[in-house]
Image 1 (cartoon, one colour):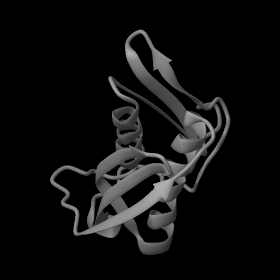
Image 2: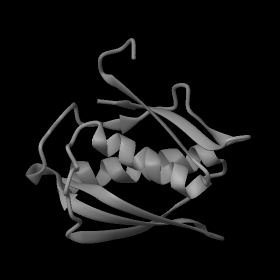
Image 3: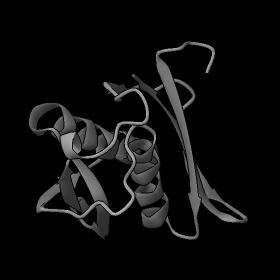
Image 4: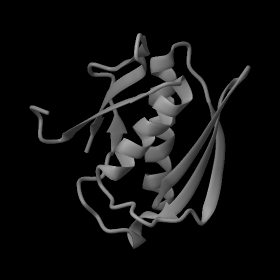
Length: 130
């Protein structure tokens, strides 16, 4: 990214939910070595949005929230679509116990946000402040 305090993550997968999960994994792997990490607790929530892009932002904001408030990072992600939004299950590990490899994300931005379905499946790209 042109700005040194930005992180750009791109993800793709055959399904919407797997694309979202890959985005979470990409964000977390950008600043921690998750090799062998095991979740020690589960965080469940529902994220909502009028558009798929809004759901992506809400999901990543949930990740940043738990990192900022509890020092936890998801090492596995379960996503289930539902009428009231997207049910998320995050299997969390202690971020402080994992080797740091980069700058920690502080916020999700709307700059060049994209999420959609194409001929090859689903893809997304998002920028985070670090």
